[in-house]
Length: 576
Image 1 (cartoon, one colour):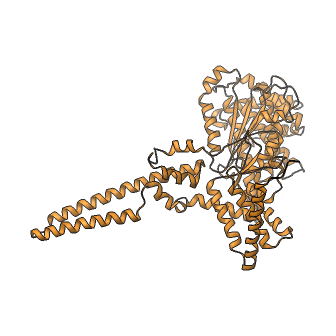
Image 2 (tube, rainbow, N blue to C red):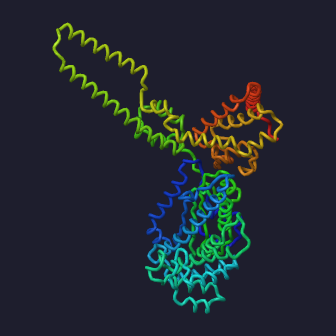
């Protein structure tokens, strides 16, 4: 549906114009979004022929390059500077993506082409929108034009030392009219010869976006107000310009953020998400295009917050057994190996990345088994050739030799039948923790982060329980979650109303993910069956590593908790 609502959109607009796609690590959410966008791009020619206003899409992978560096807390001397540099790289990558991808998709040769006159009109409308929200942009645009005219260059558009013809006349004529000044200077920058220009494509719109970005940098340097929790003015100017551009084009502009969990690691990244939410939920006049936002993120807490604010949230759930079996059998596992498939499903379930790894390991095991069989056949043929080359023996000795060889083969067969595994799946399952060492290491790291989570430290330090009872309470909650096939229900207020510190910590580290099934209320479910195995092992060692007295206390409270849970299931409380 279009954006022509013409009514306030504090909740409904955000639901229509902001979409979150979330899931566990390895669930395939990012790949699904990229595949959908790739399919949309492949059908661009047909879409442009069928639709009068094709969508303009800006996509950024937040984990690409150094954008994901510097996450997490720190205390070392250089970590703050490193984190600030990483945040600057991420915001700079967002600005570059917005500037370049928009310019490419509306270039005269693109499916969503806009001619030069139309781009100049859009530049003026963009600058009007920026000035309405950021009045300080007027002086910053003038300052930027003066710097560009002084041959200092324009980042992303003109190298240093490039002369801009006629800039003084343009500045004298339009100093009091920043929209017209920006349009005129953008046209002049786009007209610079290709050998001297950095613009690709060299269009007025592209030059205007570069000018607004530079104006934002200069507005920040001239302002004394610098807050880490706010996005730079260069990002704010470009984001507001994107809104004005969508309204002027009467086309939707979609911002797609992949691996959006990186944004929440630093204040300015979180501020960018808030700015995108505000832009997506803003009121739009009837008949105009609007800014839409699609965020793919593994951050369950951020997805729950967005859901509470009114955004639409899609979750990438695990595959069903029928779907997973259709992929694995018979391509990677023989259709007759029913027990092998049951063991694989019990071990990894429908987690997409784990199933892919299982498929790779099954192929490796099949190749190894085939190689071992070929080596055995070659060894047998070699022994047969050696037997034929040995000297003649008496008939009795020859007969006794054949009997001995037959007995050796029978004993070898019985030994192999007793010790060797029967199939490729069983061979793999016997060494599964070793074969999936990387995946198990990641889950163990998440379990360690869960054990160190601040909410659990608050639970241990702030309560009146002893160490044994505290460990039992923690292990009991984890075991109860692992024992349920469909997770646990969220509180009445939704996932955003969670108060249990254990559930919050599990959700924060990614061992638990949110679900909003249509048939029931919101729930918290384990990220994978391997995560369930790791958590159960962690809960078992939690009491086992305590001193003797505290271990006995922990086991006693676990027995009390199991008894209370079974009684509550057997005789539920009547409804109030």
